[in-house]
Length: 471
Ligand SMILES: NC(=O)c1ccc[n+]([C@@H]2O[C@H](COP(=O)([O-])OP(=O)(O)OC[C@H]3O[C@@H](n4cnc5c(N)ncnc54)[C@H](O)[C@@H]3O)[C@@H](O)[C@H]2O)c1
Image (cartoon, rainbow, N blue to C red):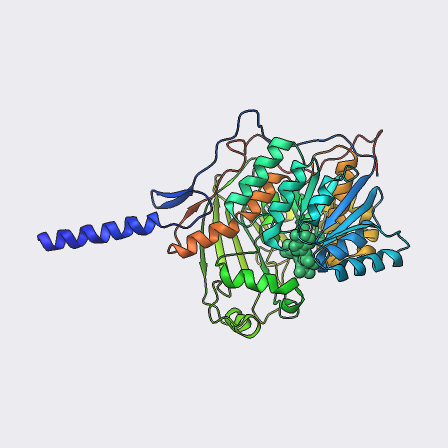
């Protein structure tokens, strides 16, 4: 009996000491079986930046840091946006800066000031003729550059994910709250046409109450691995387990579910497969024989209002591109992949009157689908759609994202995506790793608003006063 008791005691101690070894970027403990990370106290004098506004800017002078694949296309896009001015560019490689200048010349744009080297962004941020620092570098440099820029009086826009750890998420939130500067993550998928129209449908109740939402990033990156500067992406994935790229999947779902605008994500659990293709890539390209990430990672999230979000990540599979995007409600459903479709009850829209073959098991016929999509397309999208498609960037959504960012800054409006979105959508990276590395246990999702997630009433685009608007 004594021996059984001592074995039990050793086992218990083993469990507790294993719990004590949670490796996280901020202090963590286990409360009732849930890994819980410490929320830092808000400093005296610091307050939330929900619906933050700043003085309207007559024109927005942009400094772009990181002019690889993504940054170069962003700079070119800005030449099409009224009220945006490219003031300076910065990169580690002179050849990338030369490439951007050549593209600007092709657009008949004068050469812009440039900075080269890992610290060049500091000089760019110290200039007093730049309003917005637009960051398109690799993941691990996003937060340090953004924090430096805000501390030097600049608004920031950061490519996805904005932050790679909970510590970095809090750094962004705290710096935005202290400096009162905008900090937007450049999550472009919330501006895709299907997502915007179905968001409007969800808000108008066409799907009843939305209670399940699915999203993800499934994209075979074999054509891209060698194009990332010094293989930064494969290197990161080979040393970090979890969903390292969750924001394209989760962004549109959080807007549809009013996250930190009436609801909040409370807990997640994650699981991954073993790595097959990832480990082979790392062996071929990095000469590594280990790989931290699984080929496929799935995360389930529960919200305070009892909804569920499912997010998947797979950049290795031999299968077509898929962001999964679907919303399931009590009275309807929409899904974008592999073929977009909507399923709603007959009394939900005039277009459906007279259609006698409506069933829960069928998507709407094409004509009714097209009519609904046109009806629920936001007015501002209707106005800029043709130009967006012409300028391009993932079919136009990148143009719409930049257009909205510049429009809101010029009109002194809150941005569509705030710093809490950036933190909430990026935090899944570390939290999914914590769940997986600790036996797929639940992990509490920090409330980056520190208790103010129920203050706003849903997600809305903001528009200027029609008498005074700057387009
Ligand atoms: N939203 C989207 O659809 C989308 C698509 C692709 C990439 N991205 C994101 O864009 C970012 C960049 O990706 P990419 O594909 O352009 O990678 P890339 O490797 O082509 O470009 C990164 C660039 O950053 C530069 N850089 C790194 N550190 C720097 C520093 N300290 N100062 C100045 N420049 C620095 C590098 O020289 C390189 O040119 C990533 O965060 C990625 O996740 C987003």
